[in-house]
Image 1 (cartoon, one colour):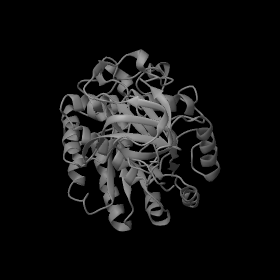
Image 2: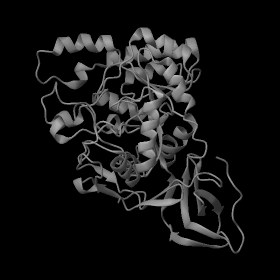
Image 3: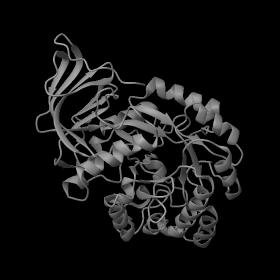
Length: 434
């Protein structure tokens, strides 16, 4: 989609004007007015000529491009008791997320063109947010993967280690996928053979530590293999939910010369094995919440520019499912609506700058995934906007949550307040977190 000329005539009637906002980008801040028309940013500057159907004063407030969450599991189709496109997207926009990219481990899995089209229809009918859909790799669906990429799938997701859901790509199929498919490849990087060996060692323990059942060695081995495959095939690989210092040390020397990008998740930034033990299965996720030293290393990587994106890995399960004993409780936790509030708390407490946050959550995701009309506030771009107050902190409460499962591992923590206004394609979809 292309841009169009700003509407600046005296008789112009805009859909929306936001006045005196402090626009934040990775390059800095600018106080300006923003006019929206026809789903696009029509004007950025000082006092657009003309009027609007709605005018909002944003003096003293900040505005950023909509958050692009490149890693969600909205569970629809197949697990609608946990989340649907309607409930998941409502939660998303309440937290400033205006675009979501949904993962393929639904039921049925998104592993062929028919499943892709079915999910797209469900999302089109029910999503309050913009959306994209990942194609799921199997041991033998390379032809289907290319068809899905050609039909608009945002990338190919490979589960190198088994997680929640039936998708698992064996090592012997990896070479074929890298050699015969097209598009970006996203990877859940845990080595399955190591996971199985360690799993067997803990099998008689009814309540082991999850980060010991899924050790850092499994993640490190998988990343080593990915580096080999990228060097051999020059494919862009996006490593999902990186969680350890060892992985980051391995990637640092090669990241500038190889097309590898890296995602971090809020639960690996704000939880650690030591601090979340009381949460039990509520913090159980794959890859697991790691020891405190890894958590600190992830923040160092963020501030040194070695992490590219923040993805929530929103993977909701019901409290009843999570209450099962360790080996039966599913892995995954909700997070699409708390990602931005958590990062805003990090800004407040000096762990990251506002500009770097916008880069991680909006600009870089748009660039990496080819979302050319998103990720910035410029004339002609899609009007995906998030208006918020920086520096306001609250305690996360049950009543703040809109996800269907109704819980969060971050309850009681300091978070930034949800945005005052969220605009998707020029339309106001959330006010003050509702």
